[in-house]
Length: 332
Ligand SMILES: Nc1ncnc2c1ncn2[C@@H]1O[C@H](COP(=O)(O)OP(=O)(O)O)[C@@H](O)[C@H]1O
Ligand SMILES: [Mg+2]
Image 1 (cartoon, rainbow, N blue to C red):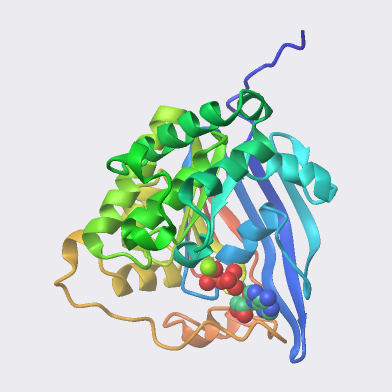
Image 2 (image 1 turned 180 degrees about the vertical axis):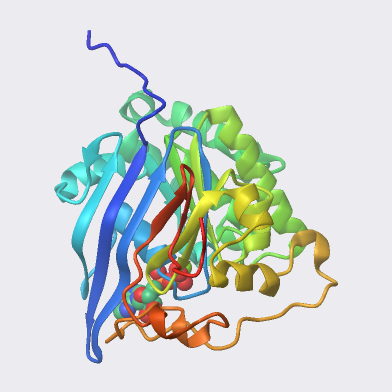
């Protein structure tokens, strides 16, 4: 038998210089432009940035779900050492849902309204878990109930035949997570899992993900525009702006001492769960148009610390072993 050597030093997911572009009428949209992200086994990583910064496109690329007019223009995505960007659709189907699962940003509408919950979970199991599928309907049903209980759906046994509209928003988000977890993936990517939910339910869903991560020994990526949310639930953070990573590091370091002017702005602009009553200071301006980007720091038009020397392509650089920043104003 092949002996598997567990090496905690090699990343579970390694994204290298990923660029994903969309050919549109107004030009080439560089939605993701040279993104590097490393995720180690067991990590909980937060990916943060305003709407339009390329978060979803990055991870849809990982899932092999970029559709025309979009395409992965260059770069590499390795999962467990295996290159994903060159996988055939058949191979991808074996990994997607089974090894890596993603709950989509519009989760609340992503559930099929006309299919019973039990059937939505069974579909995933039949596709990806031959062992369970071979054991028949009863085994599938048991796993579905197990997953619904795991995500905290009360009276799970008796709700299998319900339709999505019979559940509240928070419960539907839990069901999406149950479907994603049905095959016990190694990596769960949750795209804006809390956006449509009120504050109390947000905290419940995040606590749930944290709990399940421990139980299933899973790695987790939480994508959100809310820095406050990730600060309490992740070990590491990647901050994205206009298709690029602008800062990354341990969560506590980035939150306590954000170095990039954009991260500093984000921190001031977004209320934390515990500080909803305090004043917020939005960052002036909007995310740049991602077509025909000028050769300068992408945050230039909105940056309070900009100067003429920022009018060039700014590479990301290491400040220390676990800290990177894309700003020439930051000293080491
Ligand atoms: N299907 C598409 N066609 C053209 N542009 C797209 C498409 N999908 C995403 N984009 C562009 O990619 C950019 C990044 O989008 P996205 O990754 O969804 O941002 P985020 O998830 O950070 O809010 C956006 O500016 C958007 O205009
Ligand atoms: Mg998104």
